[in-house]
Image 1: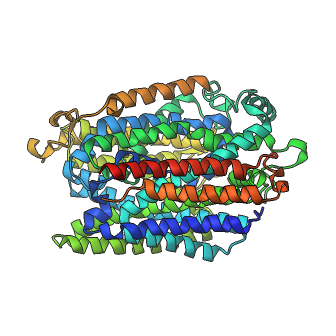
Image 2: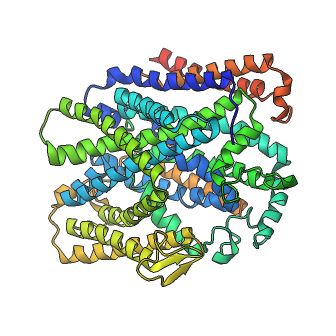
Image 3: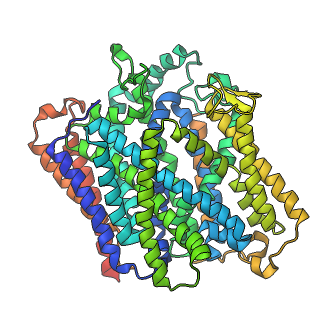
Length: 568
Length: 66
């Protein structure tokens, strides 16, 4: 598949890169110390951190992956938003942000240091640093691969150019630069894809006609006629829906363990909220992000559903086929762009796509910088240096982070299943995290030993469960079953959700038991501001009703519930 | 920090809007077969231009107040 670009499309792309670097350059003079470079000096207004919070997660998986899932699974994909994101974002805003922002911790691992001990922080900092580098590398690889497919640009050139642009704007403007560019990218995505959705939906004849055209897609694969257009109706049994998941695994695995584990503890997103200019702004950050997040399925999942409805109509294949003759779902979004966008707006759409990959990479690099500088370098390698020294370290960590990302990109390219393997390891590491934070924040008796060993054995528990389970049609190996396949699942996703639940429960129970068996080394004084029962409630600041986190949070939850009912 | 993000956002999208409007007016209507006969460059160019100018105005007003 190839997209023909006109001169004007290249002009639009070029202007974007000039702006991105221009913003970095304009911010350079504000970078006076490590906190302005790595934490934006806690000076950013809530609407900016809110949109950046959303965009930081809008990397490679989102636009390409969600359109692909929309084609593969239909509207059930929106569970990743309405179940797997919004409730956790509201919880973060209302219950957890006061501890992150109020504790004066500079990173999520540093919160663990203040609340528990050095070893828990180091475990979290180290695993996080490795994961961000690989995520950034995967983003870079996916971008280069896509550009190679669509524009026939050389892979190496694409890697070099995108890495260089990201390097320059972060090196100059640090976290602020990444945040500002994430906001720019948010508007690019919305303004770039809205006309695409409009054209595609108009072409197919509206929502009613789309629903009708998705019936044969569902029945031809042996599912009920409405399988692509109902989000909950067919979740009673894992065999009844294309995702291969039943509702308990969906609610517990995705809605609770994975979602809260990601949105409430991942420093990549939490870092955006911690850069806000006040406690009130920090708490509003995830809520401001939740509003567009709720509506994003219309922008990224709906096009995928339209593409699959068009696929096979009149014998043609709308979504390009892969080498094995099945649709290559990752090309769903590019296929739509090529089909509906004439030159001109095509440049906008393509720029939006590239922007999302680059900011996915930038988000990871800025999070890596802070964790490397504060949680690894300052705490283990060179403590008690001047702030200017840490600014210098943070700046050069950008170069290190980018070089490692490039290495990770080439590694991903050379080994076919390294991506699956990494995602598996991430799942092992991330699944238990939320249990540690939940107990740390809401149970003052939780000890450092409890947290550390609970976390470690949660990860081990996840790995063991993976070794004991196998999804349908998969071979023993990276997909699981390497110990002895005892539990069988309808899909990878079903297996992942249950594995996450097992890991979380292991961590939760062990942390409690070990905490009860060990003594609390932190004094009440040390825990003030870090634990719910020892922290004074945040004072009601002078906020209008629509700025109060609790009010806003409840409204968002009501709206999300309504969306679930409408698309039941 | 004395740097209002609405300025660059306004500037970028006004610029994009303007380019699309000019291109939409001057380009061959045959280009628009794939976009269902709609001159999407012109129409969406106007939307982006309006959005860009709106952001710019917000930033301008905020600056005047301080």
